[in-house]
Length: 284
Figure 1 (cartoon, rainbow, N blue to C red):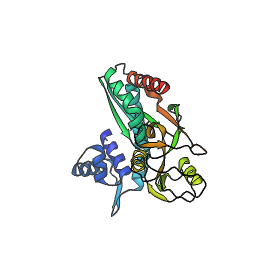
Figure 2 (cartoon, rainbow, N blue to C red):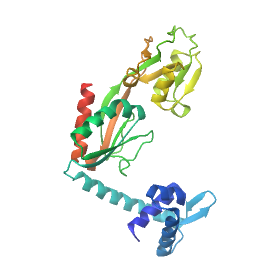
Figure 3 (cartoon, rainbow, N blue to C red):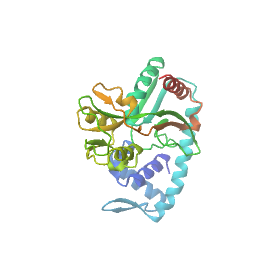
Figure 4 (cartoon, rainbow, N blue to C red):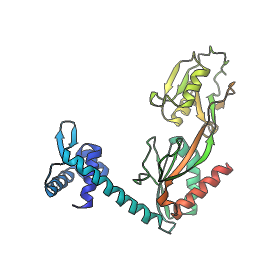
């Protein structure tokens, strides 16, 4: 068996269809089909059952999956260690963070980093998914949840204050529990966020006018007069036409954490970026 065929097997088992697996690996669907057929002939077993809803592992495929995942982890570990021993300040770094944080906090820092280290290419992914650092889906991740994986080196980067905002022309609320000003808040998938509960506690009679899981979208809706919104202050304070209100209690702040795999701890380009981020945030 070729390692490339094991990667193919893993992609199909995770994506469930040849088309999705082909897109993930950058191959065509016919190529995926031919290589899967060759793999099944090589091992002498059917690895997938073809169903109307996609590809489902057979018993033999399930047995093979555990071994394939261990092979993948060893290959990824080798790649990480080789990358981590690279002494050059060139190459690529993949960075993941929330959308608003990438725009309003990281983008200015990354622009300065690029001027200082032009041989390093930064790929910035503003994604709500929790990307897997062990699989090199990202090299450096910024997020609001602490990291618990033992192989991840992490630290709290900063505490982000939040504020209550309204369009400059909108009347200030009375904060008497009877305010019926419309609210702009997170979508229901993020309904457990602390600012959502805080907003409803402060304005129990106010209707929800709009929801979005994107803080920049919330800010633009607020700027257009759509209602009150709780926003990170680095975002809300940066927009002309928004006013930060003075409610009787402040919205909850959120901690931002950074994390990277321990195998990359000596990678010069990662160290250089970490130093610049920590210095910039600390002096902001």
